[in-house]
Image 1 (cartoon, rainbow, N blue to C red):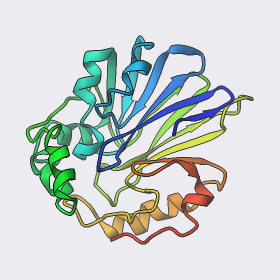
Image 2: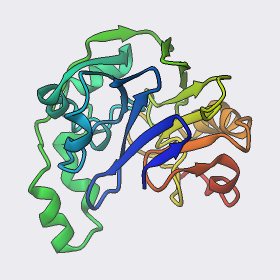
Image 3: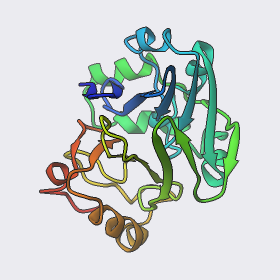
Length: 237
């Protein structure tokens, strides 16, 4: 389900089986430019991409199911990928970004679902960053201010991506949370590079202070207001 609120327009696409989400947000001041969060391959997205001239890509973290469409996107239009230094190193190594172990992602799925994923999984997948920053960065995107906030726990390079504006006709606050906050699923902290301690000490307090009316765009599951997504929030595992 795509998101439209007056002049705020975000297209949402999901990876089959794993339900990882890619978000394509159109610049409110230039509809030929987009901000793309967590790219994945999607034939359905092609109709949106053909209307664009360029895009800025951000990643909520380095795991394969959230970066798998970077190289494909570069074939569609001019893209600039901004990455934290830790994330940039991980996406360039198929073992560090977990694509080498992608079959494990669907180990509990049906045989049919596993076969479907084998058709598009790349076990030696890597991609590269164009611009590398330290722990945080910020920049203007149309009428919005984009900020990255480190939210470790699910992975050591996990981050939330916050967009804010006071311009009328636009959604005031939108936060892309990746796997630091997912809709209807536990926050997994037991993977290599994960840390339940960091999640509880750093990420959980940040998430708790997000305004209830902020729009949350999670790494898996449908978007919604923060109050609705966290009313029965599961614990990290």
